[in-house]
Structures are given as C-alpha cells and as structure tokens.
Amino acid sequence: MIILTATLMISAIATAGMPWGSLGSTLLLYLLYGFPFGGIVAAIVTLLSLPIVWPLSRLLRRSESVTVHIVAYLLLGGLLGFAVCALNALSNGSGDVVTVFQSPVTWLVMLACAVSVAAGWAWAARTTLRLLHRRRAEATAPVSG
Image (cartoon, rainbow, N blue to C red; front, side, top):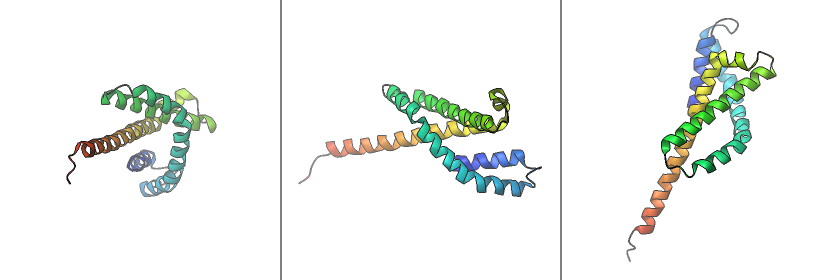
C-alpha cells in the first residue's frame, strides 16, 4: 500500500493542472479513486499471473542466489506493470504499445510493480526462512526434564 500511495501521489503531482484543477484536488482525486481501483487491478493481475509465477518459482527453487531471485522478480513485476498499462491504453484507444512505452506514467507504474513484486518475494522468503530456522533450533535444542 505504501508503494501504491507513493505512485499515486507522484502521478498526481506530475499531472496536476488542467483538466484536474489544483494540486490538492488532483491528489484527492487520485487517492480516492486510486486505492479501490488499484486494489482491484492488483487482485486481478495476481490471479492472472499465477500461471507465470508458479513455473518461475519452481525454476528458481534450485538457485540459492538471492540476487538471481530479486532480479527475476523485478523483471516479472516490470513486465506485469507494462502489460497493465498496455492493456489499459489499448482498451480505451489511447495509443499503441510504442506510445505506451513513451509515457512517463508507464515507467512509474513499471517501477512500482517491479519493486512491489520483488519486495513481496523478499518479505515472504524472509518470513519462511525465519520460521525454518526457529523450527530447526527447536528440533536440535536439548530436552530438559
């Protein structure tokens, strides 16, 4: 949610002015509509990306390098962000894929998605490893009695 809020605020600052009005009204508009729509889009993209993420995670299971995992999930997040922007532009007729790539908003969305996906993986991996270490420590601890 922090990354979504930051992305919405940066987008609002970048597009403040006509036709949205002052910076305050633009921020309010982006935040009021951005959270519900951003959450819905994130949920849909999560479900639709499972067929891509599952094989990727199975492939990366053999690699112990954190850097490889981070780079893979950064790229995945960036591609998902671009796909969302491209589908949005193509569905409302505002341009083709080249035009979408030239938009600074697309790059901001790609960056936010890349960081979100990689941070989500890092959080999940850290939580899992912490739990595994705790279980191993409990299993090897001497039993007092």
